[in-house]
Length: 143
View 1 (cartoon, rainbow, N blue to C red):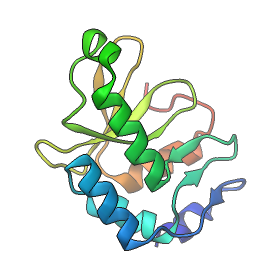
View 2: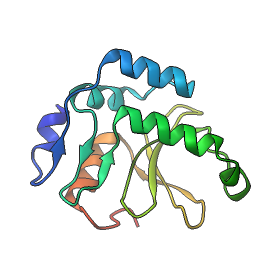
View 3: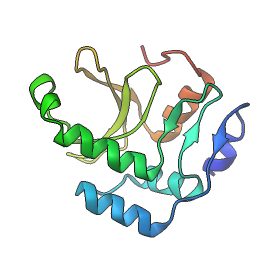
View 4: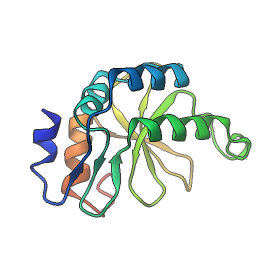
């Protein structure tokens, strides 16, 4: 399903699928389960890049590394609200990050604005987020 959705958009780039083992390691490293839609997408394509080269869906490794950095960076602790309840999975290429709330667990997508530390709802599900991001490559469709 996910590959077919992404392939509808010109210039998008899909990756080889990740493995269930990599996803288990990701969940263990973050201490959180992946939302089912993100898990399914990563098992079809380990990340999605739009026509401008923006990682609208990160690879499993980048999801792990970025979330660990956000949660452990001492500077961030003094500048921003905690990130433990979010699972970042993509960005807009300009500093804003997209995330699922994990406490409580939801499948809605939020954007974290790096300039003012706001966390704003942008889509009811991963599919809507992905369609919006790919239809509006290079634009801030969520503002």
